[in-house]
Image (tube, rainbow, N blue to C red; front, side, top):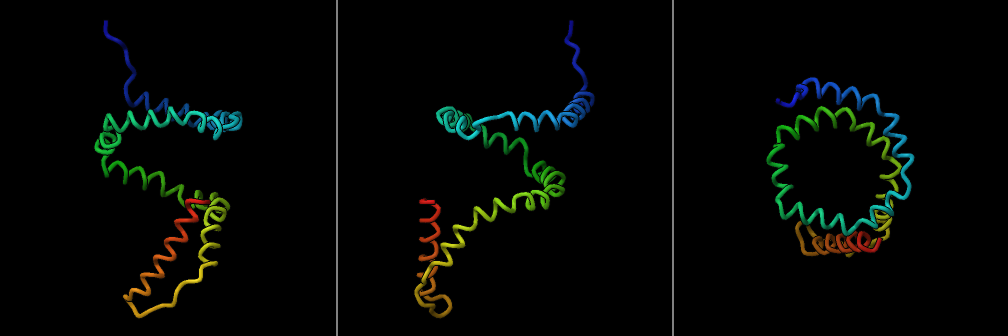
Length: 140
């Protein structure tokens, strides 16, 4: 006797309907979660093992080849386009907190004098800026 399986259209329709009705459950689950970052940090060995396994299996490349650029573009435009502005707006405070230390670092730099266009003096200014920003990133 063969196994009775629902068709892909019916399965997709049910998936979307159930997921759409579960927004409250989703939010409740997030709110009920304690110590998310602590738990993730405690599981660092598992994360590393999973990444190493993925690399050994070539899973990233395989997944990228399977999905392809066309799928990425389609989903990015269909989903991301509608969410982009709202997401940027919702992340405004996080953006300010994240970029502020780097803007402060740049504001505190005293760079060597400019030289003519394309000169070694200008490359030195770039090096000084790069070094300061990299140090800020590493030390926090």
